[in-house]
Length: 165
Image 1 (tube, rainbow, N blue to C red):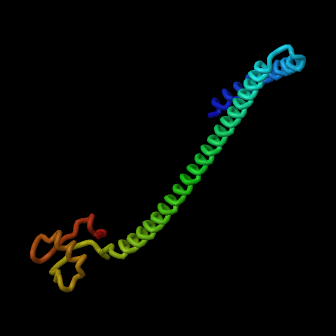
Image 2: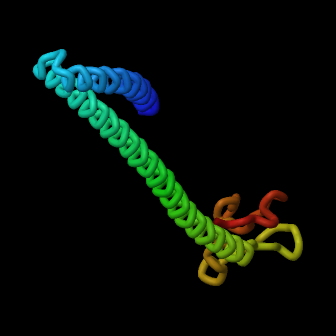
């Protein structure tokens, strides 16, 4: 667009130079016509050429104005796109921040729940005669996993502080 405007500016400058020459020629022809030395048809032809050139000058000026208006419109569209992109990014960031806060709250809640489900034995040793109705379900699951006989269960060292999930 800017190159188009530069080209139109060059055309306009050349046309102005040509107009200066045509006006000078028209003025000389007017003097000669006033003295009756040339026909008025030649004077009319010079007037038509002058009018055509002035119309071309106006057309070039209008083309320059249209190109500048298009440039302004495109610049506004670019600004609007930048603002829209920024707004969308901000909206997405807010959504992600809210989701992150929610997940942090859930993690804190799960960590607290998990801390409450850790089973710690006061001493290491063997569990004898476990009655599953009397033992909480979580303990019964660990004991039944390692039950070797019908009477006792030895918890391995790794499971003395098992963590249930």
